[in-house]
Image 1 (tube, rainbow, N blue to C red):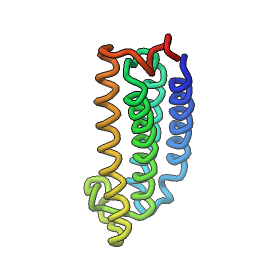
Image 2 (image 1 turned 180 degrees about the vertical axis):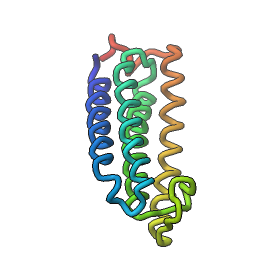
Image 3 (image 1 turned 90 degrees about the vertical axis):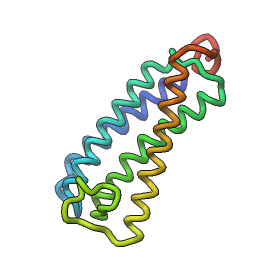
Image 4 (image 1 turned 180 degrees about the horizontal axis):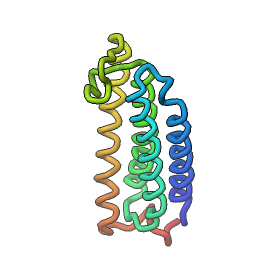
Length: 148
C-alpha cells in the first residue's frame, strides 16, 4: 500500500474516533440534535476515508490530480465534522433548518457555519469526481502501486 493510502486510513480512523467522542458529549451542546449530526458526520466521514484509503491503490490519476483528490477528501471530511460540531456548539440554523429545531445563532456564527458547509460541499464534489475518474482507470500515475 502506498503512502497516501496509509495516511487516508490513519486519518479515517482518527476521524472515526473523533466522531465517537463527539457522541459522548453531544447532549451538552447548545443544540444536541446537531451534536448527534456531528457524531454521525465523524463516523461516516471516517468510514469514507477508510474506504478510500483501502481502495487508493486502484486510483489512476496524474500526480497533481491525485494530490488534489487526497487534499480535498481530507479537507472535506474534517471540515464537515468540524463545521457540524461548530453548528452544534453555536446552535446555528440557517444551513441546517431540519436539525436546528428552535435554535438560531448570531449572524457571525451563522456566517462561519454557512461558509464551512459550502466549502465542504465543493471539496467533497471535487474529491468524488476525481476519485470517480481515477477508479475508471484511464490514466496511470500517482495512485498506481507501481509508481509509488
